[in-house]
Length: 382
Image 1 (cartoon, rainbow, N blue to C red):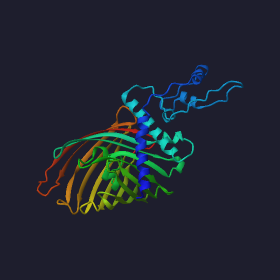
Image 2 (spheres, rainbow, N blue to C red):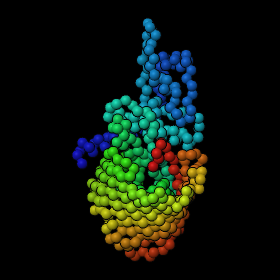
Image 3 (cartoon, rainbow, N blue to C red):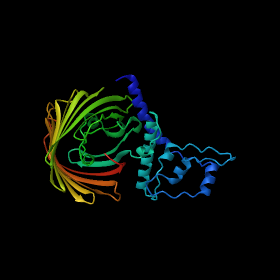
Image 4 (tube, rainbow, N blue to C red):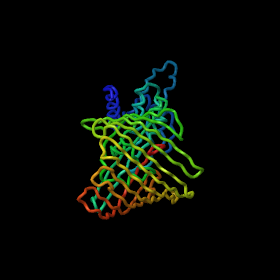
């Protein structure tokens, strides 16, 4: 990758963090001119979750009266433009509000680098989630992980370019091995390693049946690691109830994985209006793997109404050239429900697996129990 591109990516990622920190500053006091305007003209309150009407009114600049000395209004900050009004003092509502304002301000700043007027509406459409997950297994003990993922389009680049940032499993992101339908948070492996990743994605014109997209990212560490990724997706429909989804990803990472590719094949079938059956397969071969690392699973998703759902899964995974080619198999179940807010979810899981990672180990059964809390924001959360 050219040094110039790498520097742009690194500066963009660091700037997001800087803008987020700057957004916490105390809002400056209003100028006398604006204060007099507020007393002279009452501004109606905004509904919860909407832009603050007083900020919107201060942004406007009416024509001054003839002969009057007009004081130019202060230029609103990115935090002002993204300010969200909330009537709740609950910790979880305040945390979500601050998170939305921070990523909205970061979006405006980044998109402003490419010219054009600030698109506040698009900036508020930033999507993502923040989640915490815990897992206990008899074989490996307890582990806890925190993840953050966000993504937003850059409207001044015709919504074809998006910026992404998150604390995720690095191999999962680089190799494009995401689990589907929001079950990954409580089904993670204790082999997963979370890292901060950020970068730019590009999606050429396409449709839902088939599309192509590209990513250039950087792992934010002392010694930064860069990766590039190209992905092709194709959907094949069979009648009204079945679809086969093929995803082919080619990637390159400059330190550990080198060149590699991931092939994913999912078969979905609608069993009933409340049940979906999925057979999912994924295989990765790269310079950093011992042979092909693969995983197959059969899942049944059941909608229980009121945003509640349950997932049943049986799976098997391995690596063809490893000491133990068949690493683990087992069964799991996940129950998902809202947790006090329509955008806050709780996940509880349980299951039983038979792992074996080293040749000298015996394959023994291992019970597991997991939990997760997920906070969603934006129009299209991950």
